[in-house]
Image (cartoon, rainbow, N blue to C red):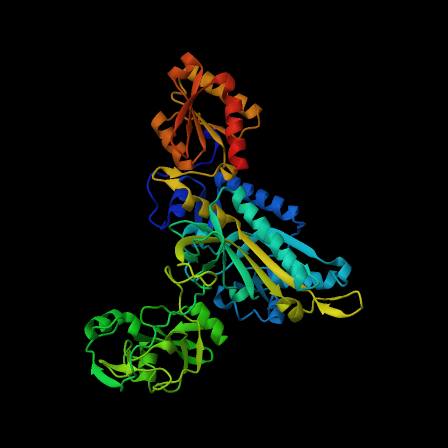
Length: 573
């Protein structure tokens, strides 16, 4: 490809709308252009990256026995109502009506459609197991689309669905996909970590996320540093043994104390001269089943995903100031469990072991000292609702957990019979008995993977593409294309690389060398071959490696083999 013919509209300035590195660089390097909030055109360079990611995915799905299909984006509401998810997805689901007034949606995922397909076509155990997948656009009406391709309203996703006779078969299918996903992200040249996760609206009871590790990641993961242990989890799912202080003092009588204008744990702890861990933090949430008070130690945060799972609710929102005052009689910051009426109280496991704790008095500018769970209040439920953090003990081996930020690029779920029972997907076993098909589902965000690769691989000059997914592997840059000898040598190099099947761009634009070099770094070509006056004289080409910035002179007669070996080595990993 000649740069003069390539649609590559690079930008010198960082677009004001772009908050994260991948969004900034994909816009600046001419990979994407915005159409509307959360909706983007993917330009030629971007599409080449996407196609490479899709090809790797296809090869690994096929390796495990997957069969590619294509399902409709527009889905009838009846199927979603059968599964019970028409309301679960809420406002994120793009809903529309046809000219006859019938309800449809734009697919955010395809569990309903694929289950309906299988219930029509599969009726015997002899037809199982089955792995069906597609790579297709998905649609979710995000409340706040942001970060470019990281959180959009339209995106490309690979989704595979497994259909098995029983849980043992599902275990095999799940492990196949775990292996396939590991190979996909390894082949894409990414540093990643599989972590235990929450299944959310998809459902099921076992799930792993595949996280590309990056400082800019919006997800926080905790992991055990001992490789032989291997525990890792999204903080939404992470667990750790509760830390309970040994009781070294007798329970004392409750005492009301003044805490004027002390709204936060930090303020109250400093004012009363106690550690935050001696305070019971009481946070009110509103759900479709009523108001709930969640109790955690003052140095902890409520894990809303865990709390939602414990309560079995679809909606969980922090109560506003008006609701807090109506329930407690006080402004936010003074709520406490003692004497709290009309709400369900859920206490974290660590709270039940506290002795002579501090808690809000449900009265403005006041707290209670010497609050003792069991004596002064009795929670309706005790559960793990705290957020795990670095330093907490590993649930498997007790080692102190560490944390890192990551970008979720894939997730695999064990669904069981959630959808097959709801949608009537049954098969006859070898004894003629009707049984529900056991399912799993497995997704990879294709465009999100491209963005995650940029978040993980960049410097101040631009993108540093992993070789397997780079849009082109080589750019040939003549210092002065108007100088005939340089132009001829650049053309010769370009033709030889093309003839060898190497993906190469010849920057034949009438621009200054500095502009071309900056664009080469911005776009992120793994190799840059410079053709200048010295190269014309010596027939030695300067090869620059984008990832390290190192340069090397390579004779023209050995250039093709040198480039081929570099690419092959990088792709082999």
